[in-house]
Image (cartoon, rainbow, N blue to C red):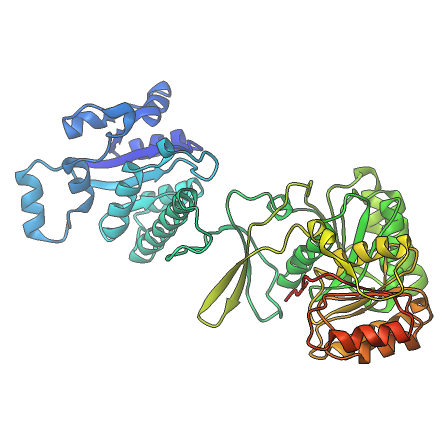
Length: 506
């Protein structure tokens, strides 16, 4: 007799699999809902209690765990002594275990912690040289094809076992996360589920894949290609960086991203106005960039992209937004066939709890930098000259902008319009970041707001800001030379605000 044990939560294609196993002369042992599903489709099964000799108890908590089931999975068919022991105790050889578990990440509760399923999967995966363990419905057809052609080999067995152990690790990590209230437990597993294989990594000779953590509200869980190119690593991380830049805003917001750094960020009364401003902030850098919007793509947005190409001979590589008016899709594709068009749904629930930084051989985990608006109440005007109401409004916009720009960063925000005019980012010298931002802003720096993601260690950035006639400055403060910086700002008659909160982003 050949036996296959089938016990699954996800019953996708399970009837088709069982029918094929029956044709191959397997006796099917099954449990609960799975057995009911198979019987409803005229597939005879051996109820598991007939193998174990025990009834299902404790509202299903005890069902599959038994000496008979685990022995039937675990004994080594190539070991003569173990084969004799199996015969002596009437152990039935279970050669195939088909099992998947309750989706705990979707239904967090103690009762949804599966015990019997993981036990069977683990036993089968350990004994992979004798037992096929199948946890993924997408593998059913492969298994049937290989069984029919008698081409099950060690490589396939080992691959399925590895997949099973990865699956169990993923599952257990969700249970641990549910039970633990600590941000930094002693043992931490970062779990992920494959979303897609990427076109390539940072460079075309590198391979890459995109994984998602379970049970989160990130828009990236809904990321869907509408048209154009497949995503590379940089395309994906640029979309992510774009989402980080605009997700703080309820009003229409647009960002042009390259290498995870904004070329321009802007708000507008409409999403097309926001995009027009984001491109205008630095049209030269926007060439080959990725656009991320917090409102749907409409015909006005499409026309701006067309104008960007026709007038400036520039292209957009990727555009991503919550949704798109499908009627404008042919026009958008006609602008550039290879331009990737992606949607990601609503972003208002996206509040990541933790942030991971990878290092050589490990990782660092930290709480996310959130609640930016709550910090506004701690701001303090430190100069004799006070910023006016409009300047304070632009400072709030600018502080949100800079919180997701690579440090060291200094930006120039337009004096009236909620948009960047200059961005100096990723520099090791703060005054150099200041210089880059001011040079990019040029004449638009006059009367504008200078925003720094940390303190000014010297007054050189303030003096440079005065040369470009900056209207007001906002920075962290907390430098040992704060008095010198404030004194210089007072002498140059530039109002300055301290946030007492740093906005580093790496």
